[in-house]
Length: 224
Image (tube, rainbow, N blue to C red; front, side):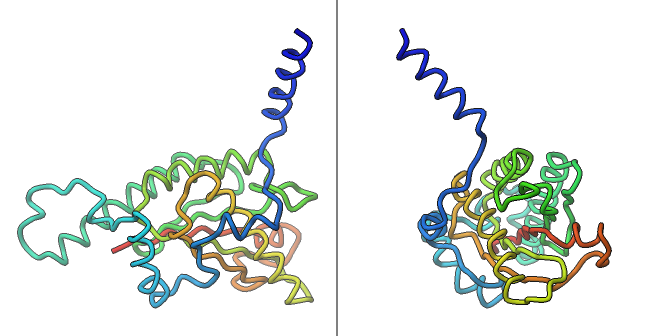
């Protein structure tokens, strides 16, 4: 009886402990197949056969096409399918992530999720927070359903004197998020991971602006 109680308490404590990132030495295993580079057009072209070879699919193959789309201009029909797919993805993300520190934006056919650092990580440690576990869990669930997309995960810092340290910190955030997604069954072959340091600020450099500039952006782009 005592052993059963101890086992139950261990399970309970484990559940209450929340998510913890794997040891850094294991990250390369979790990220095998991901690309540590910007998601450029050239990089996407090079990655597409790898992604398809791992069981991935294009948007046109992923959706149930309406019969009328078998007629007319093929390019226009495919564009309509892609726009519809990405619009639906945007809505699902927006509906699931209406909370402080998280925003969903459209950039052409791409969808961008902006996660302020404090919405995904502990305030005083480089670890996924309980709130971050919830936010990233919702994102992972949607990305698994809408799987005909490439994913760029980019980390950013506020302005720092040491550019090398800023890059390392931003890459750590991006990789930590990527590891989380990989652990939750999002294909690594879809991922591009990059740290951009203090580049591309989206707010000023006052106290509140600096908090906003510390962020991870997840950009989703259609696989055509």
